[in-house]
Amino acid sequence: MTVLVTGAAGFIGAYTCRALAARGDQVVGLDNYNDYYDPALKRDRVAALCPQVDIRRLDLADRQGLAALFAEVRPRRVVHLAAQAGVRYSLQNPHAYVASNLEGFVNVLEQCRHGDVEHLVYASSSSVYGDSATPPFSEDQRVDRPRSLYAATKAANELMAYTYAQLYGLRATGLRFFTVYGPWGRPDMAPLLFSRAVLAGRPIEVFNHGRMQRDFTHVDDIVAGVLGALDRADGGERHEVFNLGNHTPVELERFIDVIAAAAGREAVRHYRPMQPGDMVSTMADTRRAREAFGFEPRTPIEQGLPPVVQWCRDYFGKDA
Ligand code: NAD
Image (cartoon, rainbow, N blue to C red; front, side, top):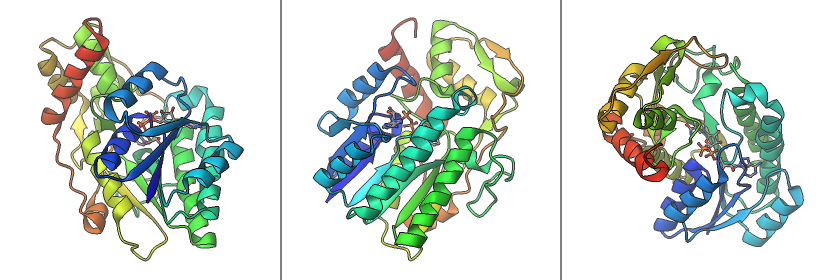
C-alpha cells in the first residue's frame, strides 16, 4: 500500500518519510524545493533522514503533473504536509499562501477524491485558534478569528476537507501542529534562530518583551501522532481534526535559558514589541488525540533542545 507524502523535503515531511519507510511502507514523496528557506538544507535533510525515499520535484499548482503522479503511484493514503508556512512571511507575501495552501490544497483534494485514496491526513496549525480561543485550546473551540493569512488558509483547509468529506465521502483528518522543533528544523523558526544566535554570540530578538508562551513540540512526538492518525481505524466521522502538541507551554525566557545552557554561552536578549500576526500563548489540549489514537508526547524541552543546539553547531559551523 503506497503512501504519498507531500512536502517530503520539508522539516516534518522528511521525518515522516523516514518513519514510514522504517516500518516498511511503500513511500513516494513530492516537494517543489522552493526557496522560502535554503533549498540546500532541504536536500541535505533528505540525504540525512530519508535518502531511500523516492521524492519527486513537483509543485502542487501543477495540476497535470499531480494527476500524472497519482495515476502512476495510486496512493491509498496521503499525508499532505506541503504548504507555504510562516506567520510573519504571510504579511508580505499573501499570494504564495493562496497558491500553495488554497489552490494547491484543492488540487490534492481533487486527486484524492478521484483516486483510490482511503485516508488523507493533512497539516493544519495551532494558529487557527487565533483570537477566538483561550488556552488550553481544545478542538471544539472557535477557529473563526485568525490573526494572519497563514492561519486563515489553514482554517480554510479544514473547511475544504470537511466539504469533500461530506460531498464525496473522502476520509480526511486534519492535524493542528503546535510549534514543532528538532534537528533539521526550520531556519525561520525560533528554536533554530535562537540556537544559532546564541552559538554565534548574536543578540536574540525577543518579541512581546518575552511575555510569550509556546507549546513547543518535538518532531518525534509529532511524527508519532501523524502515524497514529494515519493508521487509525475509521472512527465513523469522515472528517476530524486533532491537536498535536506537547500540552506544556514554555515561557520564551525559559526556552532561551535551556538553549544558552546547552550552548554553554550567555544569551544576549533584545526585547521587542509584539509582532502583528503572532499569538501570545499557545497550549494544546491533547485529550482527543490521546483517546482516538493514543497520542502521548514524551519529549520535554530539556531533553529535546540540546540535540538541536548540537545539530546547529555541526551543520552551520562555528558562526552558526
Ligand atoms: P517546511 O517548510 O519545512 O515544509 C514544507 C515543504 O513543502 C517544503 O519543503 C516546501 O518546499 C514544500 N512546498 C511548499 N509549497 C509547495 C508547493 N506548492 N508544491 C510542492 N511543495 C511545496 O515546513 P514544516 O515545518 O515541515 O511544515 C509542514 C506542514 O506543517 C506545513 O503544512 C505547515 O504549515 C504545518 N505546520 C508546521 C508547524 C511547525 O511548527 N513546523 C506548525 C504548524 C503547522
